[in-house]
Image 1 (cartoon, helix red, strand yellow):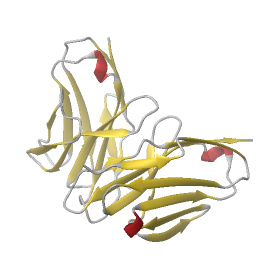
Image 2 (tube, helix red, strand yellow):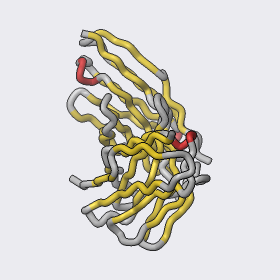
Image 3 (cartoon, helix red, strand yellow):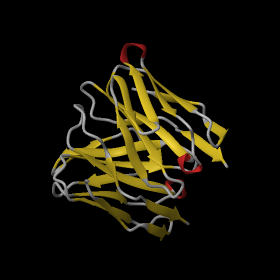
Length: 109
Length: 114
């Protein structure tokens, strides 16, 4: 089945530094999303990005489909960015949406 | 924004008892999913459904049943709860399975089996 690997598993930065999160997947993803999970547990979608580059605010997602990888870049990190970031994919003909194990990001003031 | 509500938000169940987790969405989405999350881990798919009265097995269906009586409602049933089923359970919905729309999650149901 499809597999999703995220790196690093955890990342600790000082406020103001940039963060780079990676997602690698085993099969061609027709649907790739990045999610943020608040420390309290709620999950919110950040990007739907099966290919190319998308920006929103300080966040940039870049997916290179034929290389089966995606990245999430957070610029000028803030303490409120702390939480866990997940990558999730679905492949053509497969309605299952598979999540990676996540990257736990901690931003220190 | 799509609204997905789960109930109960928290439950303590005894080993061997029956547990039903309910999920309700109000945006007429076709697809609904149940995931479990163990402390410090990602989400694993238990069951999903793309139409009322039909459910599909996810990656970890053993020990769980699912029911989709209507487009709006999707339940997860633990007939004989076990200690290993202690976890946080998330329900999600989306418009389409493959071609693009985002998942909308409920706030989670924390289940502790004792």
